[in-house]
Each structure stands twice: as C-alpha cells, then as structure tokens.
Length: 251
Image (cartoon, rainbow, N blue to C red; front, side, top):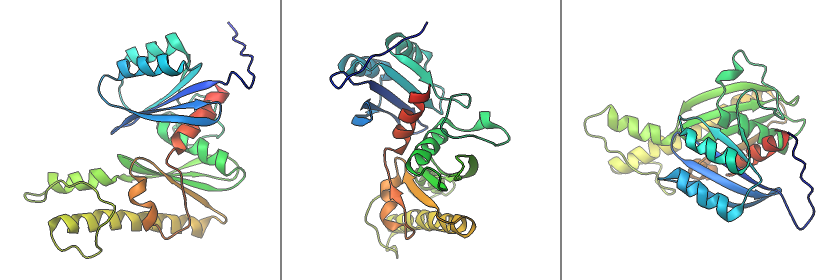
C-alpha cells in the first residue's frame, strides 16, 4: 500500500520523534522542520503518548530506543502514525562501515545523522553526554567509523558511592570550585572538571589526526560541561531529535 501526502503551507507534516535512553525517555514534536515542543516522558508512558498523539495528531513517528520498552508503545505508534523504529537496517544519511553495525546504538546513529546534516562534506565528532559519554566520528565522506564510550557523569557519581564506605551520592551543580573544600565540592570538582578535561583531551586527539574537525556537544548532561570545554564546539541540546527527523524523512 502506498500513501501519498499532498502538502501545502496550510497543512504541514507533523513528526513525533521519540528517544528512549537508559536514564530518560523523551519525545519531540516537529512541524515540518520546526521543533514545536520537547516532552520528558516519566511514568505511564503509553498514556502520555496517547495524549500527545491526540493533541498534535502527528502523521509520522520514529523511535530510537536502547532499552527494553513495552511492545504496546510500538503498537500505539503503528496504529496512529506512519511509524519507523530506528535500527542499523534503516535508510540513513550516513554509512556504517564497521565490523558489526547491528551493535551500534540507535542513539548514536541519530546524532551521527544530525552531525552529518550540520556539517556536510566535513569531518565531525558528535559527543553525547548521557548515561554514558559517547564519542562518535563521522568523516567527510559521511562514514560513521565508530569512536569511544566512557562512563557518564551520573555513573561516575554513583560508582564512588557504590565502591566506597562513606562517599555520598550527590547531584551535579553548574557552579563549583576547582579546589573542593568539603566532600561534596571535592566530588563535584573531580567528576565535572575531570570529565570536561577528558572531553577536551579526546577532541585534541581527533584534531591531531583530522583537519577542519567540527565538534558538537549534546545529551542530557551536556549543559554542565559546555562552558568548561576549551576547544571550539557547537552546543546543540536537540541534536538527537534533529537526527531522528532527518532519518524519518528517508524511511
């Protein structure tokens, strides 16, 4: 069956993009290329999606998931939209010449697609700061060659509590001293400055190898680090959603 959509300025295409990560579940609604709203989905995800679908009436939907989510969610999207679940067999604006493309996380495919769209015919490094930190390199030929994965901010805070007797779990803050004066500020300085310098160091290594490299920082925890990175970067908090939109157009 072939669906043909005739669009004009008065009736734009609405696309619902969903990102199910290890820490957060989020979605974004686009009106053609315009981002209308981003929504964090907490408890009762299926019911929340029913309300979103009823409110915005999206024509298309796309899901990036790195967790085991309920099949009811996919059924709901299939019944109400032209639905696509992102995976390594999706039609992508990038190629994936790696050993096991089926092991690439859907979130990494999405941010690589977006970075390729932002920097066509240029090398790009997309850094995602979520549960883990992912470094994702796309060369000027549009090939996603892989990268690196390291523990994310919250994982670092939690691991120090898990593997010690007395260190507490703390929440990140935007303002903190270089020289900690108590347990909390020592942890903040160690994790946040430490991770910021890791990111700068990784960018330095890529810059040594590749000329004219574009770097984009994204992810739920990126706001804590954008001001502490000394290398030139682009901070784009909605990079993954923009990648999902680009992939949705091809599928």
